[in-house]
Length: 494
Image (cartoon, rainbow, N blue to C red; front, side, top):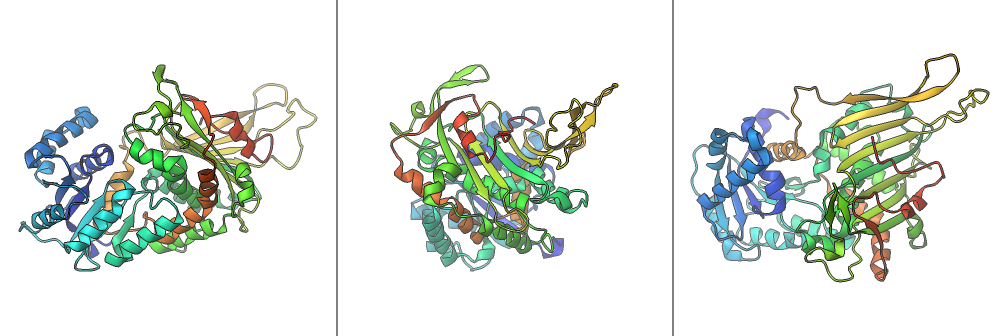
């Protein structure tokens, strides 16, 4: 983006500033932007939360949070500069008077000049409507078309609630003010996938149904639900992860080359993918989706409680913490290629990856040799914990006979002296600069909900039973029923 055209915000208001998201992601990301000198000098931050704190108490809290997270990388001098940007407003999200106090805080004269305000909703999705309405009630959405509002996922609970939320947003904000954030799109590997596909003539000709057998997208988490039972027990893994994170990864894998790396051009191609996904009839949900819930088990050798023993979880809850699903994209590129999506909590490892398995060679060239079967090639894109690409190919074993083995070509996206960039640093900088390329348009949200809605509706009526899997395992063998052939199986390791 041309720096001359950037309209920097003068304030960023963080609603839910003492919550999990702000503590773990937003504050460290903003601190790193301060460290990198990427924050405009006249930018200020307002922390909005319910605790009975003042500015100094909030800054002390920030020092503790960042000190614990950054350890030796914490720089007290940089923190002092960063902390002076903050003020604290105490208030309940439903209390209109608190927004009047916020208005007064934002209206205080400041040195320098800047153009707009960013409202970051780092809160439960059920509280989005209250904040949007109260901002409008006190005039913090005016002048219309100027300020920016960042909405975290999930956007709605189903297609109906997502549409209502979108209508409410558009009543008070224009579409180009709305930043629907999915932090997976800010990860280096996901952006690198675009480069990997479209900048390499070696790859793109093979990226279709003629050569690819199937695609697996896995996001596995070691953690449980932490202290988020009030949200998670209403949402579940399908709403919390698959409908947004995994579906976005699917679109990036499957999309056609856009005419330019511009916000709407990129999102147009992603929407085409979502619109091409084959609808799942109600009678076929069982064959296309599987859910389960973690029970007691061990993570890293330590015992952990089952989901129904977590504080705040309803008794006999059938909320899924693991979901696997199969989708088909009915277009010229992908017809007949299954996309297997899987996500779960209390898995053995914290791991996110995209695994593409290629078809078997068409010619049985080696049938008269000790090589009875040729294992297929794989391309594996690791998103976390490492950001890297792996390619599995066959080579001949050294020796007199004709035998083969699989070798892995490993390539890290980062040189040893290059520090990793957190997705939120990237996305927050885009919000500050007004770049919406890595953010989600509503028709993407709408079509994502259309894809998963049949599964949601079916599961909502099946409230009597849910499979359980021991914490610390990869789920249950029953999820293998989704595979189209016997030689397909989940890829759990790089």
